[in-house]
Amino acid sequence: MAGLPLIEICVEGVDGLLAAQKGGADRVELCAGLMEGGITPSLGTVREALRLATVPIFTIIRPRGGDFLYSTAEFTSMLDDVAALRDLGAPGVVFGCLTADGRIDETRMKALIAQIGRAH
Image 1 (cartoon, one colour):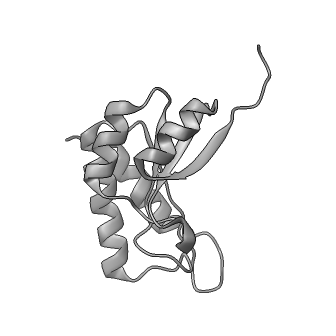
Image 2 (spheres, helix red, strand yellow; image 1 turned 45 degrees about the vertical axis):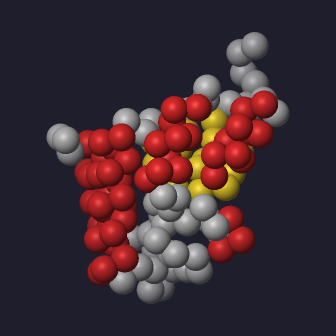
């Protein structure tokens, strides 16, 4: 039916993905550590989720819980995670970066978006 909203569910791990699919989710945001607000799951978890998925999976790119103001090392790890997930064939990723004054960090957001499109 045209016009119905999509149901996207944040889940923790493969079992969460399977439950969301069974419950009618249209898309899943795959996470680890939901008690921390969601962090990047392991590559093994993502591989298995991709193998079992019947709906698109968007994996969170977040090296730790807490705020969205990342150190240089944390941001570098986010770029590496995006590249790894792109190379696995993940259909999408979810991320966010802020500046110290709480604004969207456009420079880092653009760098992450560019990493998605880089050749393998």
